[in-house]
Image 1 (cartoon, one colour):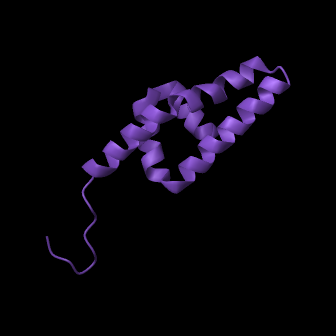
Image 2: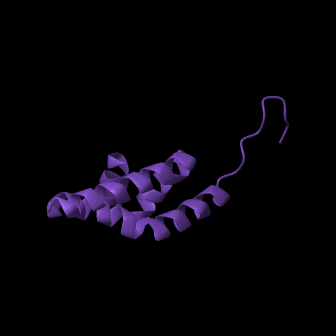
Length: 84
């Protein structure tokens, strides 16, 4: 999850979407964790930390959309004995 936040801060939603496409189902768990940590930080008045978590949660719909688009653009890998 922290790697997703670093990617978002460094490369924006498009860069984060590439990472989400690689993570597949594990990315949803990272989003859920970011949301949970955001809520904890808000409760404990840790605004600086909450900002990063909130950024990932708020950007998630666009990141998810871009990740799905990235997955459809990548060609399927041929099997070991398949011919192209």
